[in-house]
Each structure stands twice: as C-alpha cells, then as structure tokens.
Length: 418
Image (tube, rainbow, N blue to C red; front, side):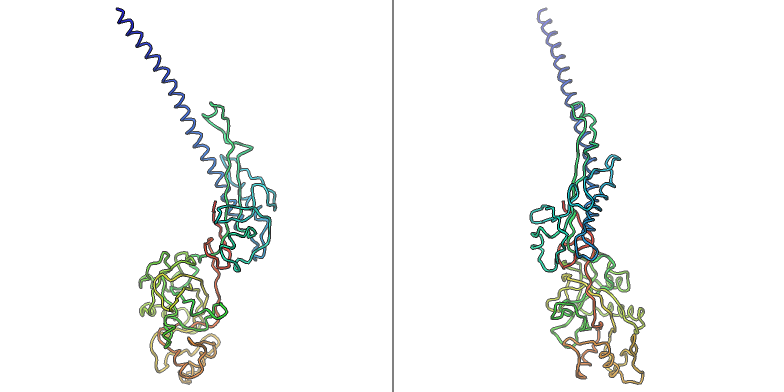
C-alpha cells in the first residue's frame, strides 16, 4: 500500500512537470512565431523602402550632368528625392529628407570608388574631361562626380509590430539606401548597328588617332598583302560565337544588330570573302540604292592587329559610313563601273576605265597606300569583293547602360552599385 501511494505521487509530479514544460514551450513557440511574422513584415517594408531608394538614385544619376555635359546638374538631387517619395511602403509614402538643389540630407551627389567600395559626398558642379584620364585615375579622384546616394526611411510612421508587441516592441524604424553610378558608355544598343560587317580599326585610324574612311575598301585590299582583309563578317554575338552563313544572311537587309554590343569585348566574326554572303550583301545594296545613291550605315569597329579577321576580335568603336560602290566580280573590261551616283555622272560613251578614274577623283577615294596617281594605281583599286566608302565617316559614340571601359563618353543609363 505504501508503494502504491508513492507511485501515484510520482505520476502526479510528472504531470505537473509536463504542464510546466508545455507552458515554457508555448512561450518559446509564440516567441518564434512573433519573430518570424515580424521579421517577414520588416523584410517586406525594407524591400519597399529599398525600391524607393533604388528608383530615386537611378533617376537622379541619369540626370547627373547637364545635357551638354559641361557641368554637374544640381537639380539631379531634386529629381532623385522627388522620385523616391513617389514610392510607398505599406501604402505610406517613403520618407526622404532633402533640400531642393542642395547636397545635404538623404540625397547627395558625390563620388563612388570601386577600389574602396565607398561613396564620398561632394558639392562640386565641375565636369571633368574623362577622356583625359585613365579609369584608375578617375576612380581615385574624389572631385569626379559620378554617383548619387539616396536614403529612405520610416521614421514618422514606423513599421508596426504584430506579435512582438507582446514583448514590448510596438514598432520599428526601418531604412534603406542606394547608390547609383553613372559610368562610361560602353555599349551600342540593339539595332544601333545596321549590317553584319565589322571594320578593322587599323585600316581607318589616321595618324591623328581619328577615324578616316578614305581608304574606301574592306574585305579585300587588292595587291597589298600587308593590308588584306580590312573588315570581316559578324553576327554581333557576345560572348562570341563564330559567325555562320545563315546568321549573316538573316542580318543582311535586316533590322540591325539583335543584341546589345559591348565595347571591350570579343564579338562573333568570320574573315574571308564568303562569296554567297557577299552576293546577298550586293543584292541588298542594289535594291536599296539602284547603284545610284549613297548607302548609309553604322558598323562596329574591331581590332585586327594583323589586318586579318578571326573569331572574337575586340570591339573598340563604331563608325557611320556611306557605301558608294560595291565591286563583287572581276571586270577586266570595266563594263560594270559606276555611271551615275548622286551629283555625279559619266556619259555612256566614255570608256569604262576613264569613268572609273573620274569616279575615284570626284569622291576623293583612296587605295590602301593613299590616293591613286598612276593608271596602274587606279586599276589596282578596281578589285573584286571590295566595298568602297566615302572618305568622310563619323565616329559613333557608345550609348546605353554604363559599361566598364572609358572611351571618353558618359553613359546615358546608370547602374546600382550599392
């Protein structure tokens, strides 16, 4: 009987211990639920604040400089702040403290350094000629204004807590910040380039370092083996994939490059004449111009150290040219020479070779080694598989999203860096 009473007492004590354990676990469970619910809620709130900071910083950085690029635009701060407060967090406008035109508070212009991963506020409105400095020099120059920092908050209307208020936490102040960087233009947007042809920089770069298309020939440079293949075919692919005939044929007379083309990267290409593709290109030219008008196009410029195009040449620029003549086949009798082009014409009774000389002189075209002088030099220019450009050509500035290589041109579209 004594043993039975002791057993009953033990069982009673165990029940009491279980109740206490359940109570403790319930408190812990409620705490975990409170933490999970409130942390998720704060995560959502912070994401909304981050959206406001991101959009404001990007909008301000896009207007960081005046349209002509001569000075920093102080109104970029206002644009950043106004854009940020258009965003809401839990249907409440985000809070951004800033003074219109000033460089104080939650919106600041300044310098972003990739080397230190840091932002330094700077009131300067002076524009720096980025083409005169290396990327490393600009990265270290705190007076180079290249970024806007925006902070967003929930101070006046803190984020309310749910279960956490059981433990004395009524609400939470939440904030976010973003830095948008306006770097160097390093790309050409889709459709900026017209035909699947890339020109060797070495063939159009003059002694002054400027583009001069006076050579008037690509793909075949006549009888000068040191200057063979001054251009090649491209499919605009990056990362580069060797350009194939079906790809190039689809791009000829198409809608331009289908991809963004980034400077400083390799591009899908192929050297050689590619006769069928060249014929399609010639047909397109004839359809577009009836062989009587200039054919304007923008083409990528690539590095060709040995004037021989292979796959993956580096894109270093773009140039706008006027195609004035295309010679596909051998024509020893000069039967297919130009007879009419824009403001120039040559009588049908004039011998073909004489028309060719007059055509070259009128449009100031040149051979690989310069302007022709002798009849043999004129004849050397009349080679098959040649595309002749007018002497004047316009270097096209890169545009699009911020890139990593300094070509002396600011981008139009900034990127978030922090």
